[in-house]
Image: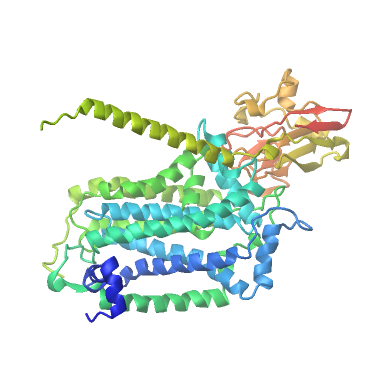
Length: 401
Length: 199
């Protein structure tokens, strides 16, 4: 590589050339990755978009529940001002709101890919665990962000979730006061949620760095699940996968911008209609549901009669993801060669969608039963994994990819 | 030269220094965590005065106390009659499970049953003890007025729209609800015949 004088100067002081070689131009990636491997780079793109749009929104947003006139508040008004008066405010806010949902779409696809192709299995256990931490922080950031417009759904969603922590024995009241800064969700809650909503994406950025570093140590899995690190089975990341990722970015942005411009509320899925009603602490809306990406876990919560048990199981449904790499004992990674696991994982995907549907809908006895069945399979999927490899006849693996 | 390091002495110093460091770090957490707890002005027990005479017979009013919603209900004789006859449906008919559902003045079975100083005026915290939503007031018996949002043997009371918890007309939680406890009481006293001081 011909080094310019400037690059040479920088390289001598940073080792930049060696980093570029080891991480991009000579970083070996299996040659057979399909489009399911595009979602990692897309997630990075959406994170960047969220941080950028968020910084600009924070220039106009005011986290205060002080009343203005009518039942409006400073926070609610400042969001409406962004929508109506601030130059391009509508665009930046819709990019941010749609971006939140897009982030979860992309990340859920990314996680589904990892489940199907066994990317969580050794030696990638820690890579997976870091990923679960990222998921939890994302859910936290999304929850904090949803309070900020100070609409009815913001307020009552935050009331319900902070009350969840009240179920913890002994420490419950302390923890929910710590979250709210008062006896009910109010102005102090809004202030601290804004602070944490700004903090969490910065944590995300740092942990995503760790996720990518861990990936580059153990290298990418591939659709066959075979170990391939060098030779004719691999190609350098740049230019081959930078180009493929760029194509994915093009497709993603086409869909994303279409939604931002033509259907930013996505019929109440991305921005709930009730959230255009200012928060009223004396009236609960008739039907409370979280935004779609949290509804599967909300259904698990609702499936138990006991409050404490519901909260524990909801926590367990996320925590069990941490131990997944140690539950699955099969030596074969990819579901392509695991007929039983393949059925199980497909059913698992369907189950999560069913859980999401139940959590989005108003509770009825039928939906409650369906939700309970889905909850049962959600946990059964994980708990059956240690047994599956005892009887599963895996298909022969190919010699090479 | 021989190695004269006194290893056990060195280990002691490591542990002592590390221990002191941990104590200091723990102490440093206190102000930060403490800053997140309710501030002094939030804590300053705000009191609310309310004239219950403004509540019409059979009416429910939601007022605010310390940022929390509070129900004030003027129970008619028909509503008061709905208090009896379904103790077996209740999780805690005598309001004895936890402190927050009981009060000092509950010294007679009558007062335990009605959960009010004056039976006709029920005053309770309006947050569902499940996850804090405000339950809907559905005071008449049976399904006639409420459809299948309530059970067939509905004694009259409240129905929480969020997760379906049910309370009777004395705000006592009905079995099968996700809510663990009766609606909480808050301290209150009558200043005059109808003026109530809440808090």
